Image (cartoon, rainbow over all chains, first blue to last red; front, side):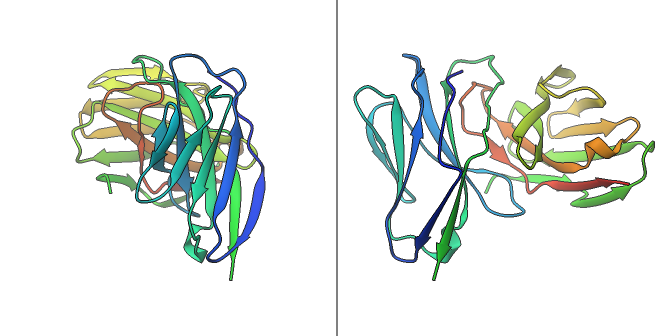
Length: 112
Length: 114
């Protein structure tokens, strides 16, 4: 599975757009990029997944450049409740892996 | 939210005692997983199940056993708890078991072994 690198922590203010970048230089052709969000005292929650270009849902946008060696999770107009740890995962969608690996993630702290 | 219930939510026990954590799902998903989360280590897979009575080891399985007698229940047992097993334990489920497929997590069990 491709190794991922993301910032350990980030600070932001309410109402700002937050972009969290994840590097995955060894991404394979059949790998997808997935982001999870974890609030304190809760399990991780799926946010978004993509393969290339741009994916958008009601929570976030995911930007993936043509070379796919990095990706950026964009959270529009964050609020205090977006304070959480965000995990970037890279791997294939094939069956039988059972090896979804979570790294340390990025701790986002949103201030008033 | 996915119907996943973990019990107990908190547990304090003594070294050497057996402990069983329960994960119950109402989604009828085939795959179930147990993870532990520790500061500095992220989430690490302990054991997983791909069907009733079908289980396999993850990356940190030593000291743990699991059982799945029904689709909806996945039990994690610490046969003789040690202080190194103090952690937050999360159960997760998925539909197909694909490596990077969407996982749904429970709210976790905080276990303290004294």
